[in-house]
Length: 524
Figure 1 (tube, rainbow, N blue to C red):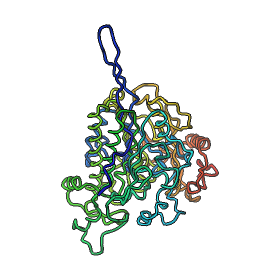
Figure 2: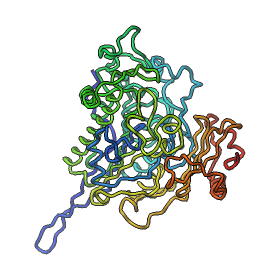
Figure 3: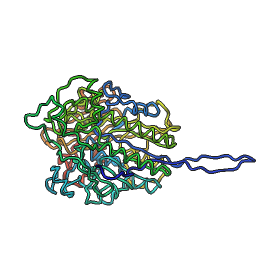
Figure 4: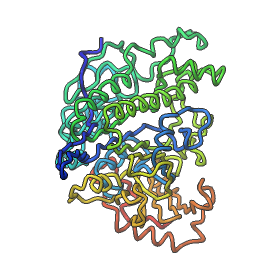
């Protein structure tokens, strides 16, 4: 049995302070709200168009769609990076990839057999990713200093258990979830972390990448039974999340809900899989040839994961309203990067990145729009106009500056972000980015810079003979098919100047791209 009924994670509720004032013969009660609660919901690998409100016709997300109806939908919001760890680091620190310490997924391989699931279960020193420096200041530190209860539930991916780069040492009062993103490749884990301690889960040991048994019938549900254990981590997360809200409803809180959904492996509650199986009809089973776990009905399972998350978001909203704190809560829903093509995910079937390309080479792991343009919805009753939409260009790394503005704390830390509070409040004094900057050392080495409607993309930067030089106008060519680099040397020159000014060489060897050491952004 999953250990103890824990009232565990994440800072989420704020209360109204009531003060009584007298007015000539009349007792009136003034209700003065505290600083607003902040809930940041970060989906994992959710594509730009995988929500109903963004045009998806196959996956049903009524609760998230309702958030958009009650708040603001963003059409030009970006991840800071095309994969998990750097996107999360830049969100928490307000730095773009030219200044970031974490610029890619760093599995810290020199420790040993870090991809061995069973070895990690026995030896926690093999868990986790390369750590942030102990001196790192995150938005959780700043919000905690401003009087907030702070919590994270879900996936961390920015350190290891024996380092100082764990949530409780990085500004969070409470943590419940996966310390290691490799462990998150199964939703039926052997253990999770409550703060700094392992909480053991009574699941069987089914290592990620386990395939069907030899001679198993891929059309028989029994063949897949072992891939759905009793305890499903998102269920445990949600239980801790609601407990955190309940414990902290009398004070302002910051809740970072870092859900691993819908990152593969394909594992979802049966009721939702059955629902989509009836909707989609017969499917070709996924046998595990692209990693993770096999599944008899992969499309139904993927849609089921997203709808399960949507269902829990609806339950959270209901709780906030029942506690009387919904109106004093800023909720932001977004994704860490574009959709995956691995593990049985089917971005072509779902048109996951529409209008952008969601396939390999254009989605997760790549700096084209399909890999970094993400959905974002913000609600804050009485402050954000219902049913509003914004084409303001923004990024994850704007959130630190935004929350500083919302809470009114002084942020003395260097940040590359710009507060989007004026946009949220439909004010006209919104400052705009001169540029957005991305750098990613994996998948061949990549750099991208957006300047207004223009976007420069460089691929294959680890191959000195094959680097690309691409320029796209995202208004006339949003799918980045028509390379205009030869026609606009002035844009390339401006991008090269930004690159030279903004890029600091990475401190970690794994993140270095040799071709960039000479500043060759605008040369073929």
